[in-house]
Amino acid sequence: MVTKLPFPETCSLALMDAVVAERANGPNANYFNGISAEWRSRIETYIAEHGNPESVPRWPAIHVNRTRFHTLYNTPQEHHSQYPILKGLRDRKFQFCPSCGEEGSPSTIDHYLPKEIYPHFSVTPVNLTPMCDACQTAKGEGTLDENGRRIFLHPYFDEFLTSQVVRLTIGRPFNAPEDFALGPVEDLDPNLAALVRRHIRGLHMEERYGAFFRDEYMRLLHLSQEARDLGLDIAEDIPRFLRLHRKKAVNLWPHIFYTAVIADDELMEHLRNGDLPENL
Ligand SMILES: [Zn+2]
Image (cartoon, rainbow, N blue to C red; front, side):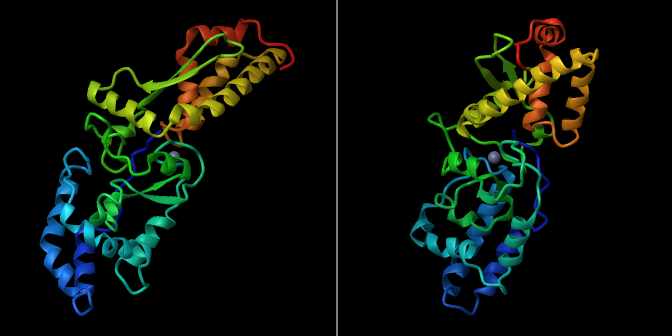
């Protein structure tokens, strides 16, 4: 699930100024000089509004020229200011996708506000977040739902992501649970809880998490049987599994899984003393 990331080191406004200055003697000088004041003000609005598409307006007047902005992102030359900054953003190494919590280094950069809709944020560092391929495919150019509410959490601006925000509920029966339901943690502010629900739905999280949780669950049944065979108590092991995963990040899939196991008293009792499936 989503994890709070530190802001990119580069100032988004300073980079924009540098991009405009570099074009002062080129064929696009008039264009970028003409829009620079408004471009700057729109980046300021982005930062002030935390990139929220509910309150960051689009800029229809520049759409006819959106390729000029896309080119800054798609084909920068090495001597251009944005080149090392984009490279630096791509080279950052994470152990998980900050948008879904899947382990593994995310391979792409996502435009939180999509560059097709907001071309002027194509090279705005606070709009560029690391993301895995599965998230990027699911997110596409999504910004707002049918009610005009933003769909996705923002890894740079949503401060509450430093805590666990997603809760798993493990279904029954114990030896072959039929569903693994994801939702916001119980004590979350109602508006943030609704946002977390939209994010889960928008990135198809339940479908994507399902196989992982099933495999993890079967491993846990197996470990429970093993503990019994050795005369050990699985209830002493599970908090250790939880702490191990918490060290990475609280919204990663295994941490969410073990939090759910520990919170489920009936399941814990089953793992200790219930009838486990044969042939584990
Ligand atoms: Zn992801």
